[in-house]
Amino acid sequence: MPQQQAAVGPDKAYADQLAAGQFRIQHCQDCKRHVFFPRNICPHCGGDTLAWVEPKGTGTVYSTSVIRRKPDAGGDYNVVLVDLDEGVRMMSRVEGIAPASVRIGMRVQARVAQGKEGEAALVVFDPVEG
Image 1 (spheres, rainbow, N blue to C red):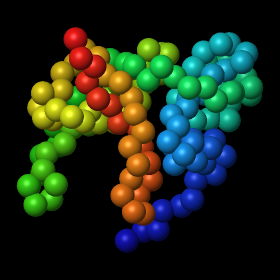
Image 2 (cartoon, helix red, strand yellow; image 1 turned 90 degrees about the vertical axis):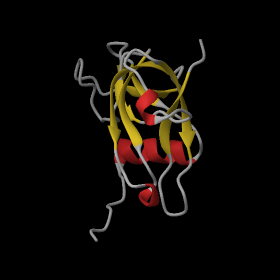
Image 3 (cartoon, one colour; image 1 turned 30 degrees about the horizontal axis):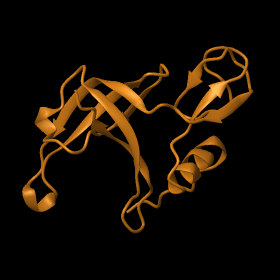
Image 4 (spheres, rainbow, N blue to C red; image 1 turned 120 degrees about the vertical axis):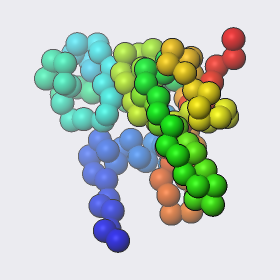
């Protein structure tokens, strides 16, 4: 099995924040736009003054797919693209409901899920009531 490389630079900063239970994205101090996935240079304006900020964490499901697995392999799960209210899109999953119940346009709220032993923490989403 291939060995996973250790994160460096902004990827490491993002992973370290998740490991501490904190979800952060970058905000460009030059063009005032949010950035995700972590980078050294703003993809919007080319500026290099990216600050880590805490997003509201709310967003809307842009796309969803159900991945089918046998029950003994953990059962079905979903993969979603979520548009955060800050204007960035990220891939994750929605938890707390059946994978097939996730719908495009559904409002969701981010949270940090700590991985099992040896696994990295990650951002997952829960449906927003109402």
